[in-house]
Picture 1 (cartoon, rainbow, N blue to C red):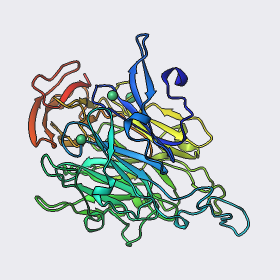
Picture 2 (tube, rainbow, N blue to C red; picture 1 turned 45 degrees about the vertical axis):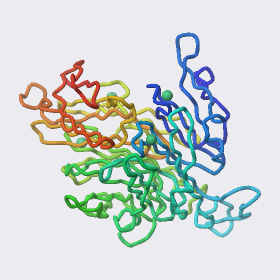
Picture 3 (cartoon, rainbow, N blue to C red; picture 1 turned 30 degrees about the vertical axis):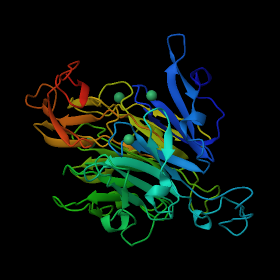
Picture 4 (tube, rainbow, N blue to C red; picture 1 turned 135 degrees about the vertical axis):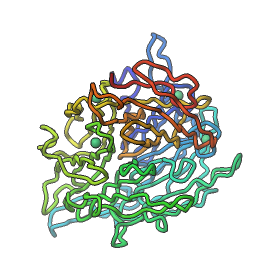
Amino acid sequence: MSAKAGVAGPFQYGHGAAAFDADNDGWPDLLLTGYNRLVLLHNEPDGAGGRRFVDVTAKSGLATDNLWSTSAGWGDLDGDGYPDLYVAHYADWGFDTNHPPFCTYDGKTRDVCQPRLFKPLPHAVYRNNRDGTFTDITKSLKLRTDGKGIGVLVVDVDGKPDVYAANDTDDNFLYLNKTPPGGPITLEEVGLVAGVARDDRGAANGSMGVDAADFDRTGRPSVIVTNSEGELPALYQNRTAAGGPPRFLYATPSAGVAAVGGVYVGWGAAFADHDLDGWEDLFLVNGHAIRFPSKLDRRQKPLLLRNDGGRFTNITRAGGGYFTAPHNARGLAAGDLDNDGRVDLVVSHLNEPAAVLRNVSPTDGRHWVGLELVGAKNRDVVGARVVVESAGGKQTRFAKGGGSYASTPDRRPVVGLGGRRGEGGHGVLAVGEVRDVRRGRSGRVLAAERGDREGGAHEASAGWSSA
Ligand SMILES: [Ca+2]
Ligand SMILES: [Ca+2]
Ligand SMILES: [Ca+2]
Ligand SMILES: [Ca+2]
């Protein structure tokens, strides 16, 4: 199937895939990151009634990106309706230019060199020209150049789609989108002052994957970042005051995440409400980056953390067979593969087939609603927020571009509403306040039952839900 679909390659020494609609034609395209080359695959008819991907890198303007790229995030940064691109670049390693001959962790066994031996590469921003091509505008942005980038997430932090980049052993970046109406893309880096650059000891962590969610149901996006051995996953809780600048608290200890211990080298990360109780749970995948770790197995177990009212409990052991064995995991994408309202997981590994984990969690018949967000005029909805109101209260979901590590999750939010089947009052009261932050417009969308189309929707175009 891969060859027939045009995705078999080989294109480059690949790392990640970002699935987004680069040309706004309604069909998701595929950007492949990797060593010294980006690849853009356009989704088009195959002439036989199906679809295929065609390599359009050369004419897309992205062929000039010859650095080592890891993850990419997308979102309409300048509000013209077309998704722009943020590409994280990693480090200046090369066989010819910078290849330390011998690295070891036990004094004798040759191993992968540690990241601090390498200089970071500058990240890149590409403006979408609305004709299938992109222009590299990095030089005009004066980005920071001191981050070995691994994870990227575009999400609305303070009113427009903003960019968070997780960097290995360097400060993580938070670029607030300060683009003036009709003006050029303008980004302002505020990671340190906002509290999302380092851990609670002021140390830059070996950061990899990233996701964001309203885990504490305050309506604001908080950020999870997976980190290296000897560190903890960083949960940055959004404590922004009304009308104030973005401020985050390192909440790893207070929210219970610290209990997992500092043994993991974490990669993919995903918030999802696995049991539909209205609180978004957390799934993290792990695996050591070096070949011969001295203290630990190279393979590590994943982590499943249940969100109990804004505090996390480690329930990994109850997760099923996959969770009881160690893996050398990297990519992670969450999505409701079978449309039953329970968010499933796909994990990629080193030297092990990918795993598809169907969510069969007991949900006690709790109600849920799934939403597919489509712009009224423009299809890119990254940066939009959805507030779903039910008897259990309000919940907020964020339309995100990128996230996890080098993977692209299902963009359709599934919202658990609590309550049990047969109990009244637990349906959706309103899928309201669907806010298109790019155009500063609000809409209110009435409740949807299965198969309903919400007439008059500004953004939510289709919903599916529990009976
Ligand atoms: Ca497309
Ligand atoms: Ca744009
Ligand atoms: Ca939950
Ligand atoms: Ca499912």
